[in-house]
Length: 350
Image: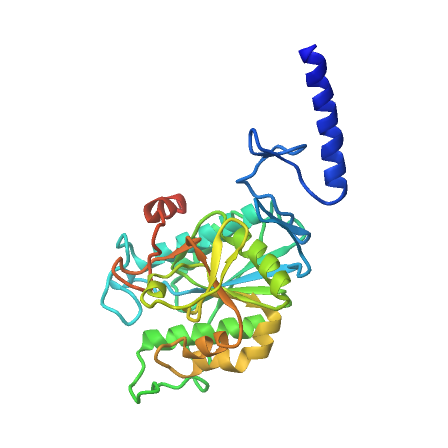
């Protein structure tokens, strides 16, 4: 008798699930926290790229802003023979783990490749491209970068910046009347180059990235899912930053909190010059963005922050990448993040 009741319940349950799915809903089996008819635990990714965002228990968001392509521009500076003595840009501080500068570049690139390949599992129709915009790396380091890129089938390219490129555009004196260091000029030249590349590349989204951000595996997919979802909800283009910077907690600021795919995202008004946005936003604000590479402001990102006063910029909690600065830097290591694990996972063995 019990078996008969059990079979009847099972049959009725299947009919009910079919009806629920037919009208656009999913049935969660509360006994084991899985989606019925799918081998998915509810803490896994439940969203479908370009179609819907699903978060338990918040439900489903229909995607109206589908991402078509992503180009990642990594600004590379490894310099060369004296790099073992090189510290942070214009600062006399060692980075976390105290490796030569090139090692941070290699692990950044490797982590981005791994994260893109993971994202391809969900975003099968998206075209991914990685561009290395390099300034003054020696041939040994460039060969190593090329070797890292050769491990993937993702479209990739290394662009070498000429040392005198944009000399006419970039001012050598900062807004306070002080002379700018050659390292800072190099940095500004590379920012200018990355914006020029974005102008010429036919891509939907662009991710401008410094070469000392090591990413978690889910970083790229989380940004893409979040961009689709929040942009669809707000009906506007966005800026996303991958890092939960410590300095964001220095002040008690009012903010708005959103849920992306597997992270909370909060609205912020400041980032460094690592961010993801759309081609539409780049075209709209290209002059203001170029000002960061033409004149040395304090802070350097001042013009970007002015854009955030008009547009929505979000960063994740907890972080999906770590900015490898000095351990005491307020612009570096994100809180509640396994720094050593992510660092070790992204070593590339040549």
